Image 1 (cartoon, rainbow, N blue to C red):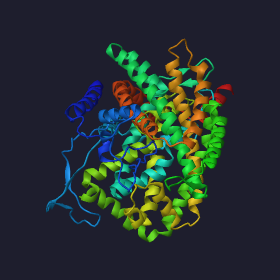
Image 2 (cartoon, rainbow, N blue to C red; image 1 turned 135 degrees about the horizontal axis):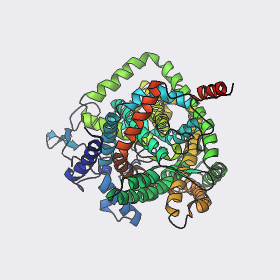
Image 3 (cartoon, rainbow, N blue to C red; image 1 turned 90 degrees about the vertical axis):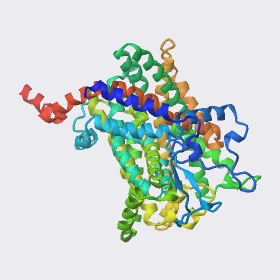
Image 4 (cartoon, helix red, strand yellow; image 1 turned 90 degrees about the horizontal axis):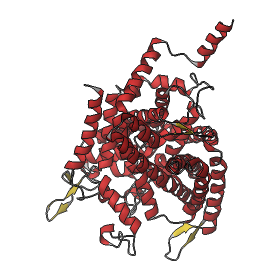
Length: 586
C-alpha cells in the first residue's frame, strides 16, 4: 500500500472515532478522577461528614473549571458512550445486587487514550517494528560509538536521553504504577508493558522529526520539537497542510507552556513538600483538624528548590543535560537497587506474582471492570508515565549533536523501555510480591492511594526506606522541573519569535516566571490550576499525532535510507572515521 495511504488511514481512524463516539455522554472523569502529570489521579475531594464533593455539573464552576470540563468533554469522552457494561462485584467476587438483580457498571475507554494506543500500534507496523529491530543499534549510539563532537547540536545522545528521561522518570513511576494496580489489579501492569513496547515507535517518530525540522538560533542554541516540525514540516507539504501546520504548532506551543508551569513544575514542588514534611514530621494541624505541611517548612523547601532549579535552567540545555546526566542514572540506580532488594527478599513469591499479573490481564475480572477495564488502566498509566505520543521528549532530543536525524529517534525510543519496562516494572513487582496492593489499609482506604502504597511496600522489607523514598521523590521532582522548563521555554520562543523575533531575547523572563512558580506550587493548594495543566499536557498528543501522520511517509523514506546504509556497513562509528582519516594522512 502506498505510504500516503497509511497516513490517510490513520487520520481516518482518528476522525471516525471522534464522529461515532457520542460526545457529551460522559468524560473520562466520570469514570475516574483526572490524572495528574505524574500519572496519579486526583482523588475526590471530601466535604464534612466524609461524603464526596458534588461533581462539577452539580456545583458552580470557576471559569477555569468550566474550561477544564469543556476540554475533558472534547478529548476524554468515552468512545463507547457507556455501552460496555459488566456485572458489578465486590472485592471477593460476590455479585452486587440492586433490587434483587446484578448491578451493572459502565466501563469507558477515554478518546485520547484510545488515540494514543491506536497510534502506538499503527506506527509500529508502519515503521516495520523499528522499536525491536533497531534496539541494539540504539544502545550502541547511546554508548557514544557514533558521537562526533563536530556535528551540529548542543548535547550528546546520552545527555539528550537523560534530559528527556528526567521529565518522565518520576512520581508516575512511584505513584502511578501503584494506582494502576489498585484500580485495575496486577493485570494492568501487563498492558502497561505492552503499550510501552509499541510506544517506543511513537518516541522514535516524534524525536526523528524534531531533528529533521529543528532551528538554529542566533546564539547557536537549538530550538526544536513538535512546534517546529508541525509548522516547518507541514509547510513543505504545501496546500491546506501548511495552514493546518501553523495552527497545530501554535496550539501545541500554548499547551506545552501551560503544562510546564503546572504539571511540570507546581505539581512537582507541591508533592515534594508533602513527601518531605510528612516523612520528617514537619506538619501542623489546620482549622479543620487535617494534617498539613508546616507553612514555614513549605516556604523553606520551595525557596531552596527554586534556587536549585534556577541555578540549572539559566544555563540552558547544556547545563540541564549535564545535571540530568548525573542525577537520572543515580536516582534510577538507587530506586531499582532497592526494588531488586525487596524482590529478592520475596523471591519465593515472584513466580506467583508474575502468574497473577498474566492471569488477571487476560481473564474476566468484574471487580476491575473486566478485560477492558484492566486494559484501559494499563494503557492510561503507561501513556501518562512515559509520555510516548505527547511529543515533549522531542524538544530535548532536538538539541542532540548528530547529522543523522533517524539516529536520534532510535536513541529516543529507549525512553519508554527504561521508564516503563524497567522502572515501572520494578515498582509493580515490589507492590505485588509484598501483597501491599491488596492490604486491608489499601482496600478500605477512603481516598485513592498511590505513593503511600509504594512506600508501604518498601517499608515492609526496608523499615528506613520511606525516608530514602522521600528524598528520591525530591530528586525525581527536581529533574522533572528542569527538563519541563526547557520544554516550556521552547514553546515561549516559538510563539514570541512571531513578534519581531523576540523569543530568544525574552526567554530569561520565562525562566524567572518558572522559578517563581516553583515557590507558588510548594506553598499553595493547586485545585483547578493543576487540573488545567494536566489537561494541557495530555492534550499535547492530539496536534502532535495529527501532524506526525501527515509527515510519516517522508520519515519512512529517511528511515529506509538510514537502515540500508547501516546494514551495508557504509555507516561508520566515530573511531572508524578517525582511523580512516589517520590512514589518509599517513
